Length: 133
Ligand code: TYD
Image (tube, rainbow, N blue to C red):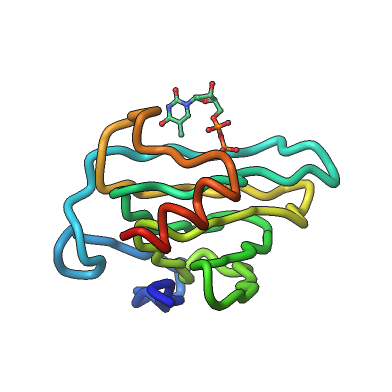
């Protein structure tokens, strides 16, 4: 499965921590868009879609959450609990984000601008897309 947890270098000193992320260096794509989720309602599951071409890095810059991944063959769950951790998700992976802590801020670095046509929001359609591609 093309979903990998990254540990970004944290530049720590007595003042605290700092993480820097550069496109095509620390992550494998150019960043065209950044968005983030916060004040997530308890118990809610977000995402529940795949993308045809989009690649993303998810970083829980505050708090924690879990991500359920499914590439049509394998499934796995990744926890994001530290601001220096990132989850790379390639295209054509079904993702569901859940178990958000009340203070969670989940930031996403995306390889493309927002395009609803790139979304696959129906799971059966996703399975057919993976099998036919
Ligand atoms: P949605 O796709 O439902 O979020 P998720 O699947 O990650 O839980 O997006 C929520 C709303 O935000 C929806 O109206 C579309 C809008 N949106 C944008 O306008 N731009 C974006 O980059 C994203 C990710 C969402």
